[in-house]
Length: 400
Image (cartoon, rainbow, N blue to C red; front, top):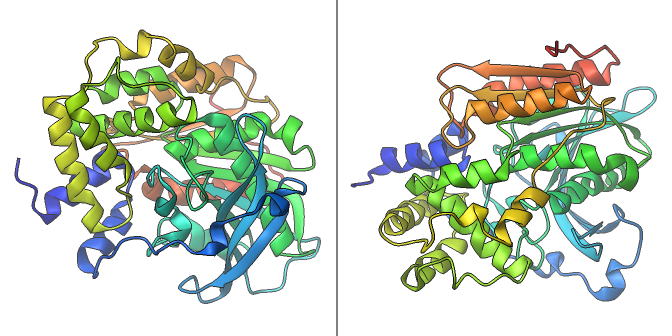
């Protein structure tokens, strides 16, 4: 297959969660890789001491909306296995005075950006364009917290698609945003994420009562969330873009959970997987190497036919598949009908699971929309739904 610029953009948008707006900007800009990391992202053991969500350091960031102030933050959090860690991210606060009583914080959780430290969205050239609905959220007076997740920005490896890891990072990003914003914020908050970020905000809402009980989560909006991981990875085996995501998961989990790949991956494919693991999803120059790697993995990749049924992969997938949420937290799910990464039936199944557990659920389906553009296409609806929840109105529900 020959990949011209337009084909590369389409391939990335379809399979890897880059929004069409970002892709178009990359096509017409002088693309460059993510910024180099700095000592800002390094935390000493002494600096890790302190409550989760407290800020280790912060610095202003340029290039954001003109009527808001943006800060890169390094904050304390918790790893999936309970260790104190540092996590980085971005906090954006409207310059206008906070409303009477304080402003809410909305957490944005990003889709796949990569699995190594230099792939952190806070290092990306187009970091603000990647936050879907940011302009509208700021216009409504909300502060926005955008975590990088552990191992992106900070020392890796990134625990890719590890639910607790993402959920803790999202909750602590809200706490950190409240610190950065000073006394002008309130405990009421909402969560909004896409793809990997959809999984992140669902886990955050599941973990919040035990981990961050002071936060009042009024709703969670998830665009094409990664819910049933075994189904997701089984589907990924069929396409080059899907093989990219599967390879990233295997590379990350082999290091995070200390699981060897030698019994499931063709040795000749390891060099491709290692090369792929170090490519981010931020600039145009990142897309062609991923397309090339996907083509190579079509030729040689796995040595088994039933990877997701094998241990320890089967148990790890089950442990990181989101279940029911606290019924008091309403849920908005957004799904594209043309999504071949997270199939509509998977999101529909999850909506039924939530309904059966007593949640109030609304599922919006967008005809002809694929995986990479669903958060952009649905941002207006998501922001309106979030605004209504923060205003205290009852959430609609399609559950019968």
